[in-house]
Image 1 (cartoon, rainbow, N blue to C red):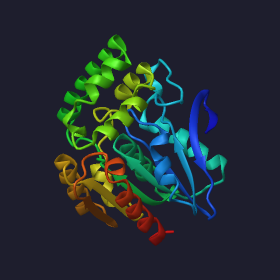
Image 2: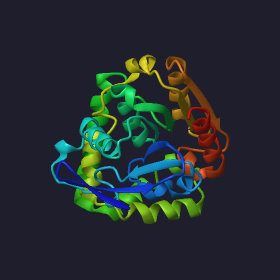
Image 3: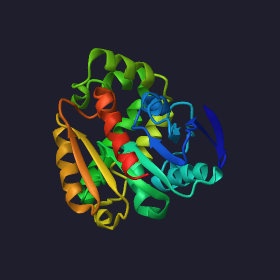
Image 4: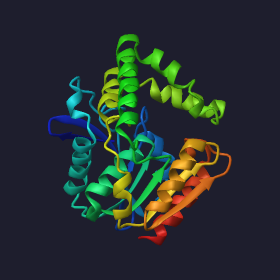
Length: 269
C-alpha cells in the first residue's frame, strides 16, 4: 500500500507494478476497498495496477464535511495519481459504485481512458423524480449509519437481496472487510456519491470512443436489464452476462471474471 496526500486528503492505494507498459485503474464498490482486487491483480502480471481506497472507504480518509465526496472531486484525485506516474492513458475498471465513478471519468476525460470495463454498473437514474426519491432514501440511511454505527449498518446491508447469491464464505469475507470502514466515511459517500446525486450519464453513452466491456451477473436481473440497454447505446460495447452470478461477479465467479477481463485487456492493449 502507498499513502497519498491529495488536496490535503489521505488516500491509500494498492499498487502493483507489472512487467509491461500498460496501466489499469481499478475501482471498488460502496463499502469495498482496494484489497477486493488482489486476486485479480495477481493475474495481471503484465499490467501496472492502481487500486485506491475511494474517499470514505478502507484506509483512505473519511472527512466529516460531505461536500468533498463528489464524483468530480474524487475523479480529479484519481487522475492526479495517474498523472504523478506520468501515465497519460490507462485502462479503467469499476464495480457498482466504482463503475459509476469509472463511467464518470470515461465520459468527462475520454482521452485518458484506453478501454473501459464496467461490472454491475449503471449510468445513474434517468429522471429527476427518481433521483430525488433516491437522494431521500440515501440521506435517511446515511443518518442512520452515523447514529447507529458500523456494526448496525453491516448487519442491515448484508441482509439486502442483492447479496443472496453469495456463498456463506463470501459473505463472511465481505462482512469482515466492511466492518473496517468508518461510518462517517460511508455516510458521506452515500450523501455525495450515491445514485441520487449522480448526474445521469445516459445521454453521454453514445459519445464514448473507447472499447467498453459490460459485465453483469445472470441472477442480478435489475443490472442485466440496465446493461442490455447500455450495450445498445455505447458504440463499442460488448456485454457478457455471467451464468450463476449475482451482483458481485468478481467475487462469486472470480476465475471466469479474471479470464474475461484478461481477454478484453489483451485485445485492447
